[in-house]
Length: 382
Image (cartoon, rainbow, N blue to C red; front, side, top):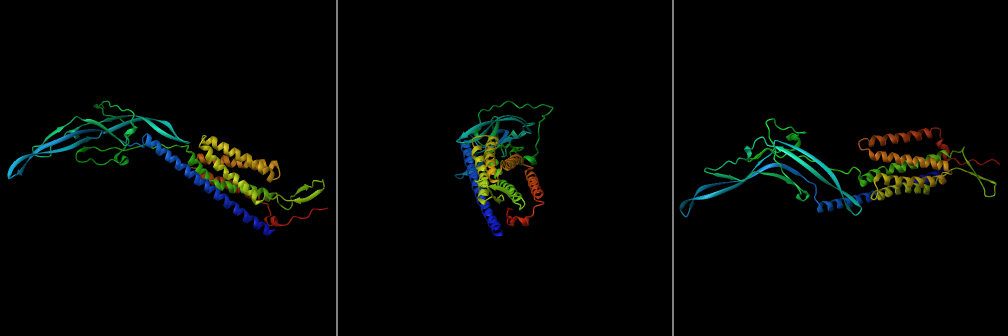
């Protein structure tokens, strides 16, 4: 009996190792599909426009300074004209940005890529425009400047669909903005020689909160826990129904009483149960590429729960035990889905779930005689 118990333990270790290899393969598949999605995102960005960085508004003025310098040419002193071109820039004292963002879905094969369309209104104020007054830097220099221009810089000009400029109004009461950022928070750089103020920089990043690949990857991280809890459930049923004092009377086909046999689960049956749990993650990944994640999860979990319930009713010798096992699997799937929706509290909820399972195992096996598990079954009377 000890030799059989040892052989079964070794077989179960092999089963778990094989299932871990399967989970690792599915994890590689998730990473490969995520890379394909990133390639699709890059394709959409190349066709439309990539991530945008907007700087401004600012007032710019092109100026030039001319002056004359006395130089010696062919042993004769002559006045030679010199020219210097420069740009004057004035940054606003305050900027009010009001924007709305909409989503436009693009498709590359199976992959849905979200592009974002923003309608932005910016209101800027310049209390004074001394920075746009060009000054000569050379003796006798004459400065000429063009008209003042309102300028914006954008990292990818292909993303502009339309733009219009209206005059900014300055009053004695000043200007009140809905938000304020200081130079430390926005990364403002000091003004240069011919530049007044600095460029305020801030941004918004958009993420897809329901990314099928990230959720599938997070679900895979609980794969080992899933398999372990399922094996614990099967093992408990086997152990609790395998005590020497509890036997199942099996009748022969001729109506005569047969031998008494304890409930035993073969390692191959453990392997099949584990394979069903591993296939769940592949079903989830493949269905989530065609359906919303919640629907994909429901279909994959429902199919695997029904299959395991049917199989467990035969392995555990009774529909009642099979339904109980299926209900436990359903609870595990529901708990996993709840963990996937959490971010900040996922760790504490997972720890509480493990503690609850451990408590249930301890309570269920508190009166079990572990030494008697390997004892041979007594011969039936008569």
